[in-house]
Image 1 (cartoon, helix red, strand yellow):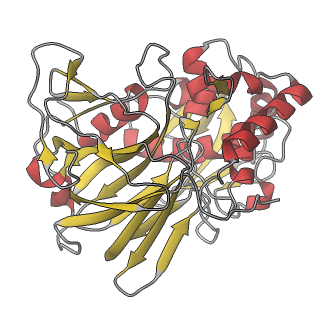
Image 2 (cartoon, helix red, strand yellow):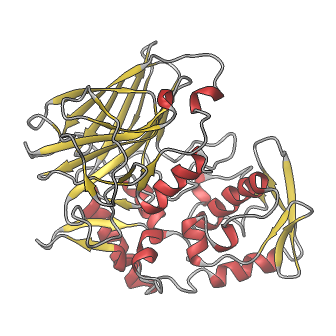
Length: 416
């Protein structure tokens, strides 16, 4: 059996999307339908190319989470059948052609979870089908993937009976710029500009500068196009997928300092949920939270991925331990555990990434985004209840217009 959460986790890790085997739909979680059955998305071409394509994938909430791909006309749904063998082509054309630079294309989607809008410049993307059916999505960590050397990015969204929730994700990589604008039925506007048009080059330059400073390997996250131009900047987690030895031992001095601190001090974690506030201390080499569970020292891979080793699966109290993991992983990525014993209560954005050992990729991504907002690691949406969320999300229960711009905002100034 696989749950919706499990298949979405597989999508993020292995770039394969399939329906869960459980029959409960996401719509069943919501008692009152607040949104329309369909949503129009405006796709704006802010690139300098007239040869841009969009793709929309997800799981259809109202069809038992069936695999969904939008066809080339931008309106018709495609629910692929399960092929008899792996790596089979799509049976219909799902290449949605965008207009000339500066123009927009409107597409219509049903309610979807695990939704992604993929955008590619100068080429069409290749999606394949595996038995299930399961959609094999483009990958930035597989050099043999036909999409590997193409200029593309994607935005994530969920549209269900409760709300539209979307974000620009940099969890895997920074590539082509994407920006989001959401206007609700009352005219209120939410926007996330994302990286500017020259944002990728800015990120790559900063990664090189950081590597020159500490020699940790940040420049190895840069992927070049065959032309020699910067193609993308991988996240540390994606970088480790491609090079297992990358960042080996990087976090160890910081982890040792955290373990020493909480051998005597008490760490307080606000779960911001049903479990309330929990306390932990280092006991017998593990950061223990009483009868709930304990964490061994995390490696750099564990910290960057937020879901392996010390932060992997738990035999007991899985949901509660997962909630603690989110807050610990965020604090490790931002390197705030030595300056704040109450997580994430009291966290200040000005304290993020101040230690020399930190997730410099995330630091750099946030610095390049004009408003400082961007989803740069899996738990980048963790924050104190009174702090500004830095994850770069938009959400509303009454969405009226939703615009995704490819190529970045028209005017963006780097945040200092």
